Image (cartoon, rainbow, N blue to C red; front, side, top):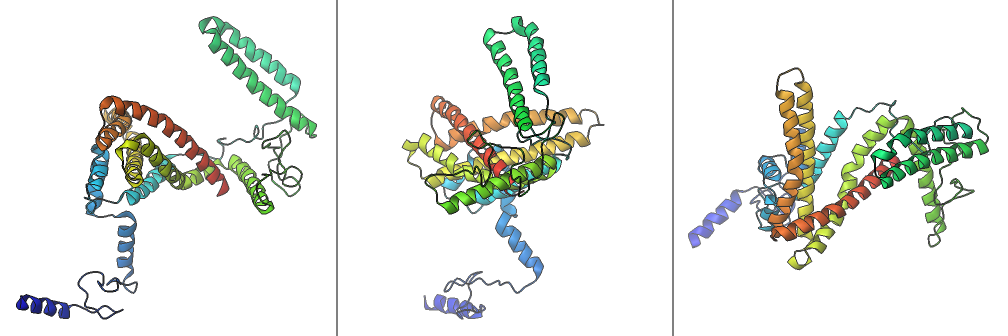
Amino acid sequence: MTETTEIQQEVARAQPLCANCDTPMLGEFCHACGQPRKGMIRHLSGLMADFFDSVFNLDSRTLRTLWPLFARPGFLSNEYFAGRRTRYVTPLRLYVFLSVIAFFAVAAVSEVGDDQRLVRFDGGDAPVRALSDIDADERAALAELEPRRGSMPDAAFAALREGVRAGFEEERERSELWLERGLKVGERPPSEVTAAQPNPRGIRIGGDSPWHPLDNPVRIGWASDAMNAWLNRKIGALIANGLEAEKHPAKFVATIFGVAPQALLLILPLFALLLKLFYLFKRRLFMEHLIVALHSHSFLCLAILLQVLLSLLAGWSAGLPLLPRLFGVLGVLLWIWIPLYLLVAQKRIYGQGWPMTLWKYFLLGNCYMFLLTFGVVLNLFLALATL
């Protein structure tokens, strides 16, 4: 025993000392004070390698993580719950890495020019029309619908007719508004935000009159004056950025993809809370459901990335025989695999029978679509706010 202790002491004396507390270093970190062996004063290549490893875990764990993430539903979550965590990329880093890469890839292949009108506010900058012309076009459009009356149910025809009427009524109200403001038929509404005209399109927020920061601001009764002033400044910025997005949609789309990972990250805790409620009697911790949510969304980001890759391969091989069709078939199979993967993962992780799993899968899917809609709307507002 004494001989073993002496050997250990000799090994300790042979180690370099911690620069902070002079304790022999037995690893990469000092066991006495916690200071790492490596500092910032070293070659830039070493710092960059540590950065990518710390942020993305780009090492052998990546390959051990990506394949089961794609091909083995529920495997990574169950491994994490079983305590086998070191061999895989952590769930949060995995999601951040894949979401950033996936949205970057989608943005790279999404060709949007400034001539494409993706964003329109209050009818856009279309010329003001005479009310008589709008009425005539409405009568003509309704007349064109009449031959279709006998080929569809009465309720469907009535809904289609009402939709046409609503569209022309919106255009009628818009033209009538601008005619009252002094514009002439054929003129376009102003599209520049100025101090004299902070709301050139006459956008209305919760009332019949257009929003104005001084004459008709948005006021919340329980909020302080400072909070209401901040809210109206943000509304003014959103209007200005909205008009900018209308003129330069390519910049707006690029901003959307830039903030999408952060916006979708905000709905992950809400989805985890849904899982907690649906599996309340499983007595799992909230963090377990959050890990399931992170792995599920990481899989979705990986599937999006693979779809982009298949689309690019199909385009590059357009002149070759069979390959474009093969990539197209693989893309269809991938779309089919996404809902099947999520269903099987839910079954394997929570261990309930198929009838109950299918029922909860259906309900969760509907709830998630609501959350996703919330995330998309939030993403649009964040994009406009940061344009």
